[in-house]
Length: 278
Image (cartoon, rainbow, N blue to C red; front, side, top):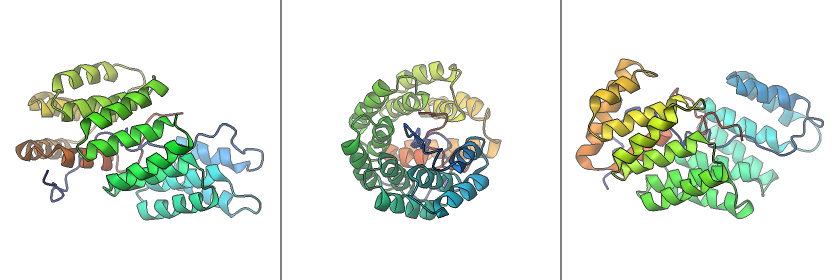
């Protein structure tokens, strides 16, 4: 399929999303709050969206004397992604892997980086490393699904989303990604039905709504796509999204669509697992 890299249009729906990430959040069974009392402060800053403060706090923890703090490196990397500092985030995850070579979160973070950089093959390698350490890592399975969607392997993507959902049945982001994958495979009716159900969930996110708008657009219902798109986006961005969908349909380059879809954020931040607390 011919790439649509010439189209610098914002497709504002999830990563990687469930991307989007949101793809990875620090999730350690026993965070070292006792050894690093400022860690909770940093995590709370990121949770409330104060990314500059979170970056500052994580960096302070990393500078502390004593054993390195794995959650601080992961939190810093994801906060840098939130701030669109992709290269710096990449260096942070690389440092984390040098210090913690069996860090599942760091490998998932690197996978998210490669998705942002439109390098799905490298992303799969990183997610596979995470799964080799923890075969039950739902975030890695979700990310792997996104990478396969980017490569046009819809069947493989669906299998990975299904596995991620089985491990985390309440995760709306994974279900939304799976539904969007159905739309890209041509099953827009099935995708719309599932996404309509997901937008009614109390855990729904703007990305789920924008996935629904995209599914309607792919189904040819531009009126509904515009209506739903305007719930979260300005008119100009909705117009750009519709134009992009039409361009993709003309070339049938759905691999190009999934690439843009999962690497361009809803709010110009890199939140790959929106609403994911696990």
